[in-house]
Amino acid sequence: MTLHVHEYGPADGRPLVLLHGLSGHGGRWRLLAERELADFHVIAPDLRGHGDSTRLPPWHLEQHAADVIDLLDVLGLDRTPLIGHSYGGAIALHVTARAPERVTRLALLDPAAGLSPVTAEEIALDELTPDTWPDLDAARAAFAEMWSSAEGADLEVPANFVQLADGRWRRRYSTAMAVTAWSEMARRPLLPPRGTRLLLLPAAKADFVSPELVASLRARLGADLTVHELDCGHAVYIERPAEVGALLREFLCEA
Image (cartoon, rainbow, N blue to C red; front, side):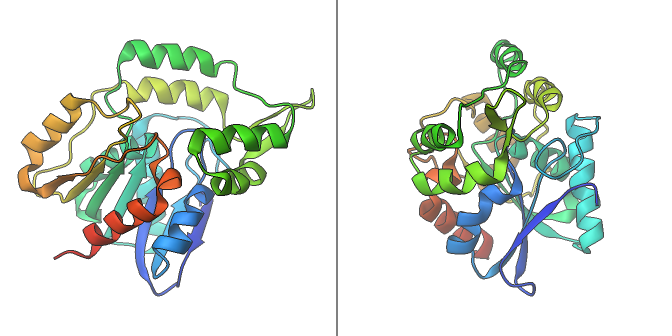
């Protein structure tokens, strides 16, 4: 397969496909999957340009969506709930727009779609010089503080860091892909078709979900949209795994 896949839970459990955000990897979902969704069969790929998946272009949203649909084909998943965080949320919207018959329900965790072009350009330029840390202890401390989760940082650092020629450490993703990704996140978001059941979980302490995006989704989906703001930063499922898990479980299991 083009995408490396992390799997959690029983093989005969109800399947869920979870898409991580930019600079992440499928293993970031481990705590949520094992503790809050333990009876589901969680399928969490490393997206193109991340982890152990291919790093080859193209890196646009259409290709990421095609990768996910190919993954569903390989795994024999005709229809499944789809959950996306940050850039994974933008990709999940593209999957749903391209193949709505494959997505039973859609959950977007602080999605990064329709971002300000000015902001996206600034961050893309920063991506040309990726963040590095002198050692893994420094990286672990930085992520524990950023996510308010020492446990999340303990899992992240050994799985998603590589050492550079100068001895410093950086996250394991393609810089070229990341620059492209910020351009893609500035595109007008694709809205899901009417009738799509959608759970939107914006982070109150982040600036990714605009009022315009919420209004557009409300106008398109009406009562099929559920919005629940979380009082935390961008990495909602790492910072608030129990709360996010409970909301996802309720959403996935309701009639």
